[in-house]
Image 1 (cartoon, rainbow, N blue to C red):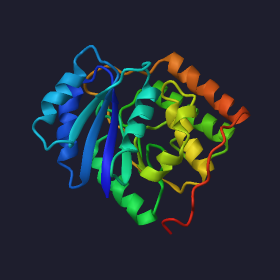
Image 2 (cartoon, helix red, strand yellow):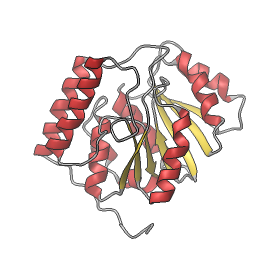
Image 3 (cartoon, rainbow, N blue to C red):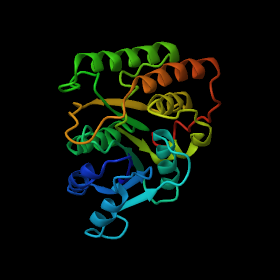
Length: 248
């Protein structure tokens, strides 16, 4: 399986080198694309420096020129992936909280179950949130519960951003019509994949503690997620159906 890893960044200069080295050390056919939102700390320049150590195309950075935003970064990365000869797209954060050591399990789960989307889940048996503060864990758990009930989906970790997608699922998804601006894109894309008829599987992983840099989580981000879920439920975006027999 040929995989492109899409990683949005903003002021993650201190994190990109250890992340790249952990990814390229995996026994997988995996390349890395950082999608940088014009980080003032020089994240993109640091990625370019590191990329010189590897074959052309193994590690790349795309510096966005459009409107800033976490969701827009992922959308641009997914669109870039559609022009590449790959089988799957891995999405993850740059802050070290999504351990590279968990990636082989995502790949094995996709191949074994023929899944269209594999979610690394903190909230299934065997998963966890590590040393999170109680308040943050409760906010995350409530967000997942709220989204499951309002959108009527069964997945335990709707707010997580550590996922492995089949390329054709994202190619069929109407990315240009997504309404998320921030982290709610994690919920929106999983919900749309569910409505498209994708086979979605969750596999456990333990969320690590951020060791360097600062979190972008805020009350504004949480509020956006709550309001977006209500908006989607009230006016669902039309989506194409996947061919269920294409890999069975």
